[in-house]
Amino acid sequence: MGGKTNKQLIRFLTKEFQVKQSTITIISYLSNTLKRIAGWTA
Image (cartoon, rainbow, N blue to C red; front, side, top):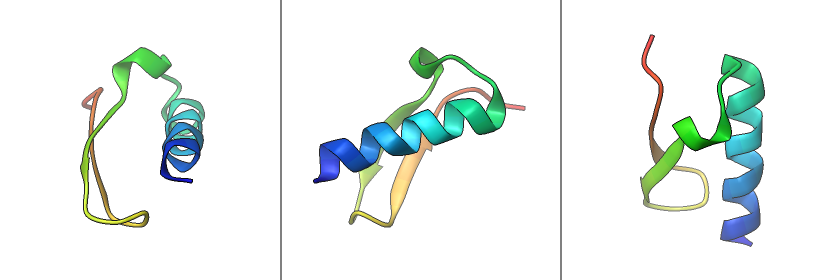
């Protein structure tokens, strides 16, 4: 389930911040609900 959840999270973030999927990467996670994300900076 984690891979599917990660893809959904990336899709959500790309729509929310209006960036390409390639700019967002999940770099680590402690659980399904706590993730560290790298990508586009404001």
